[in-house]
Length: 284
Image (cartoon, rainbow, N blue to C red; front, side):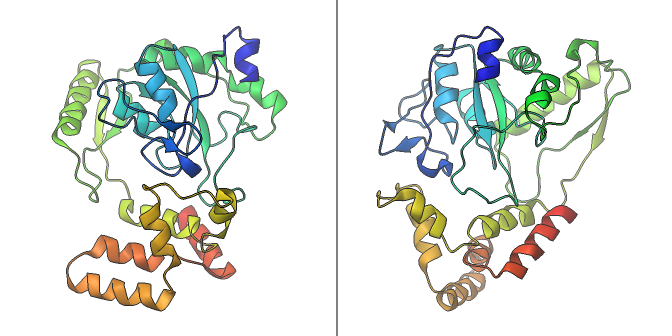
């Protein structure tokens, strides 16, 4: 925000987020519900849902969000705007808050939202990583080049439309097809790509964020009622481990393998188990 102001931006204010920044619906007990401006019966996504809704409604030209597991990308998708989760530490994360401070197995990253990819590029270059690296040594001092100067002919771009875990909706497949056609027309070399371990990555993250048994989140709530979107996960986390494993075995027999695996990975971990998860993340 300070860098934006130095660049001449007019900061309108803060936008709404879901409780604990851990839901795709933007609702909390302080500011209530944020709705999708395209359809008030729908949600704007989360956790940077207020920012995406403000952009889609024409309240602002650009914004800043944070993303750990989709918190910029999901609301951008839901609201029809553009969003980017940069490579970790490409922008400074100073001043950014998280629901689980100290959890660094999968870290959140500050990133831009705007109404178009072109506007994203303007915001990105205005908040030059080289300048941020002077103030924050965690930022890698690499310059931001001009996107228009990149030669597309011969550029190799990996693509996929199904990660093998969650089947994409038909409009998403169509969008990938449109993007492929545009890239091919520009001379790009398209390379089929299969993301490694897409299913395992999700469970690894859930195992990590629940490694304290939920005590950090309970402290953050400070007695506030948990939101409806988070209540089922919190209730599962509170089940004794033997009960969760027994339920997982039952669900496995019924073919509910995803929910069974969720029950197995949730819950408190020993330090050596958390280290093993961290090593697995690094290998993936």
